[in-house]
Amino acid sequence: MSGEHVTFIVTRTAKAGRIAELEEWMEGLIDAAMKFEGLMGMNVIRPQDHTLPEYIIIRIL
Image (cartoon, rainbow, N blue to C red; front, side, top):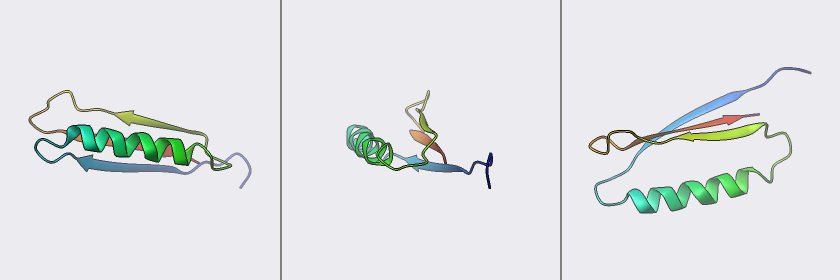
């Protein structure tokens, strides 16, 4: 599979009053994931509208 990549897209919605907890969890997730061989990159798209705090996490392997 040389030259091929896999992209994972995960969404998470923060519960009311728990955005800081979700941010902390994502920071740990990113730190752990960056240690794995083959990870091409990660990106987090944070919500623009905090009435619907949905986060999109993109991982490229």
